[in-house]
Length: 434
Image 1 (cartoon, rainbow, N blue to C red):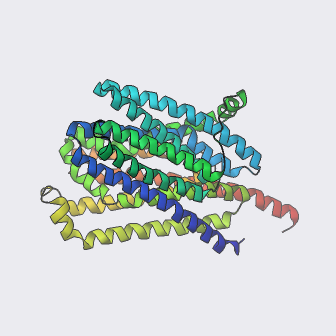
Image 2 (cartoon, rainbow, N blue to C red):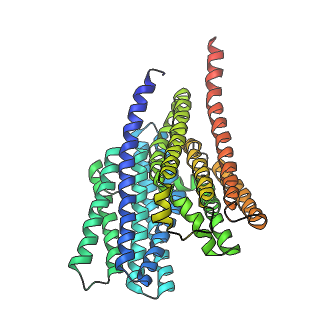
Image 3 (spheres, helix red, strand yellow):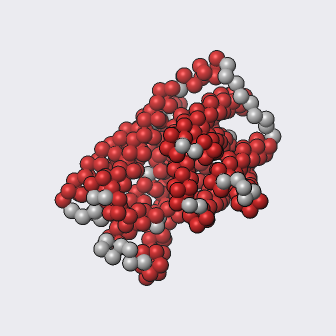
């Protein structure tokens, strides 16, 4: 098994780079698109676009909890190709239904909020198709179809740019906001089509009793996944809401800047989850525990080094940040302290994604839900106390405390899972006289 580790590292490294390329390109396209739309749309229209994008991101989160994450965890552990095919059809059918429901909910929400039917329909379609494409990506990663997933990501980015360009320059009579949302919707459709063609498959949907029976069989796991997603959202966004509610939105702005400086690492974390979560699940099923421990330790060290590298780049470029990014807007805020605490928070969050991938790969959603619940309770309480007794900047220490508690629980859960998977082997060796 030890001789296999270099080969596995090369394979995982290649898959990670493929996933990172797709994640990075999508993130870059979305970032540039927001900058362009800030310039060309009216504040009202850009506000609607931002709301639609936030709702789309929230839809992804709950789509993951309801179907995509359970599929990404279960499918890699199946040894039979036919069983994996059945699970793919079952989860895909449920994902299609959930995506349709999400599209209707987002459509209704945007219509009630804006009263504009075309924008609401386009926004709902965008959120629903984005959720469906995300599920297709998760299944491709679960089935180790990395090249197909990367082709799908690149097709989404390329077609999105082309469709948006066509809407803005060739269809001047079409409202720009509606056109952009429809362009992104079509790009999601193209990406799903490319994914299926790359795999040489046709879309298969079934709502037979066996599909619903299979989904009901894992409902307890789905419920924990859904609960964990909600508490994780509270843990992650609690700082923003508390600071905005107690001190005011303007006081949160310097903290938001500190957090943004470390966001370039987020696509790498998404790529890591895509590649390593199914691999961890398969390795547990094969009891490759030595490789798992080496991989987890190596990835954790690499993440910490990446955080240090980003922190070093921020320190070296501090004069430029003060001149061009801060631009005197945060003269009263202790930005060095805020950025330092933001870096510690980022390192804590990024590193606990390593045990998170293992725990989810083992199909255990309850420990994740408990970890995020404890983290949310500690984080919210700590932030509230610090806001009462010290400055806004130091409230980040409360956020770090919540992240640390969540991470500690996940690391303990990961070690428990490794020990439990090692026990049968020791029993077998003892029975054989080793």
